[in-house]
Amino acid sequence: MTLVTTLPDTGKRTASRRQAPSLSLTDTLRLWRRRARERAELARFTDRELHDIGIGASDALHEINKPVWRA
Image (cartoon, rainbow, N blue to C red; front, side, top):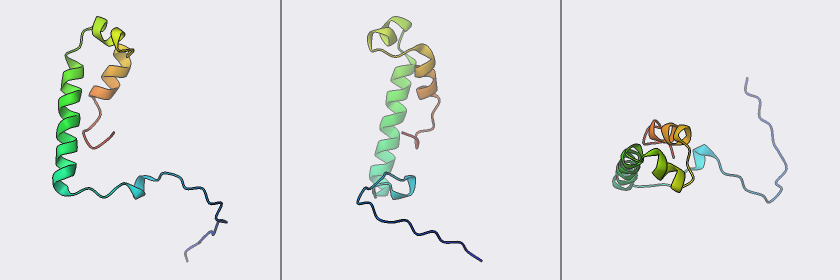
């Protein structure tokens, strides 16, 4: 038995993980490659450089350790 709940349409749209924009495989791979390069570059920043761009070391580490498929 499946329970289905119907909610009234409020006219508002919310973002959903399942409604990600459709990207071609090539575009997806390019995006992942760019994220990998950006995260590798972020890993080379000194504490001073991180401070200059307003990012703490723990925030940088969190971003660096994300898999490329996560924004």
